[in-house]
Amino acid sequence: MNKTFCFPLLFLQPDIEWEVALIDPPFQLARRLWETSTFDLATLASRHRLHLPYQVMDVMLQQCNLELRVEADALDDSMEWLSSFLLGFYARGGSPTIAPFAATHSINEYSGINSRDSASLRDQLPEGMRIGITSDHVTIEVWPVQLSFSCLAISDHIQVTPDIFHAAATMAKSWRNLEARKPTLRVVRDATQVAPLLASRDQSLLHVWCALEALFPKVSTEVSFRVALYLAQLQLSSPRREFFKIVKDAYTLRSRVAHGSYRDITKSEWTQAWDLLRSSIVAILARNDLPSEDALLQEILQNADELPTAP
Image (tube, rainbow, N blue to C red; front, side, top):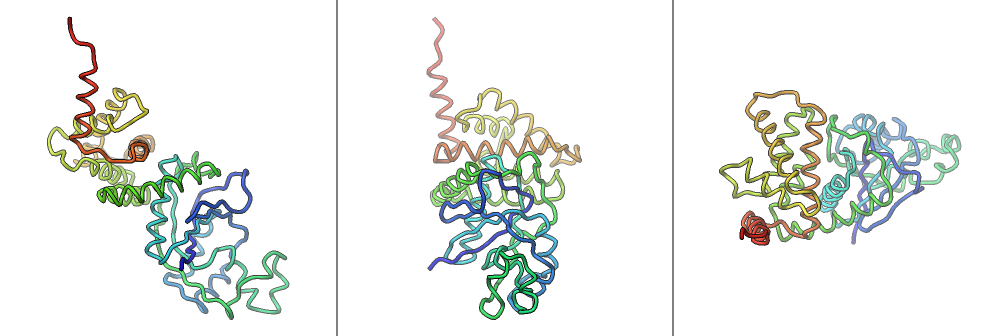
């Protein structure tokens, strides 16, 4: 029997088009409805099962407006779905976020629990919070997930619309199917989760490139040229000649950072590498496949055969 695991998502803002929750199984994205007091979290620490300090929850929840709920058999499976959803969300253009912990109950359920546990304090709550779970009848469990105090969020992309949510959910399900056939794609998913959480843009950029280079594990010589060539051919919508040049220049920057000759990259330089990763994920999903280096080269040669020949 599936359970529901709840993940706060930091920094993101719900669009005005939807009110309470969006559903696309196994996902549900819900608005945060109530403030959660320090006393509520202290109650969780004293009467429930927390696997992290409640003070950390308190700090993290200051930036929370949305919660992703995932139906899954177990916590590990729900975390796999979470990372697949975030990959889809990022590919769709959403800002990087932090999912600091997972809980067996929604933030909207345990907000106000301290006062609900007391008959004398319950009536002081807003009317919508007076009826709900109490410590006498429910045990809430919370586990750490992404305990990072750093995130390279993109302020122009923090708003979540229904279209973005449903696209991310669809991409997440497609990616899970792809990973079953192409296990190397797990490296891409993992790097996509970790890279935005690194405080150093330099190290984050190198992590992004770990994901991009993992797409072509056979490349060992003429790396900048061949990675740029394969990434350009992978694309289905971008102008390939222009994309090739962008990737080649970006790889030169990556090499300078890796060898220590360039430090403190700019936000736009980091964003360019991030966008290359996003567009590559979109291309893989659009193809429903990750072609091998040989297959991409064959595509290039086939296109060359179609060019007009000299008279």
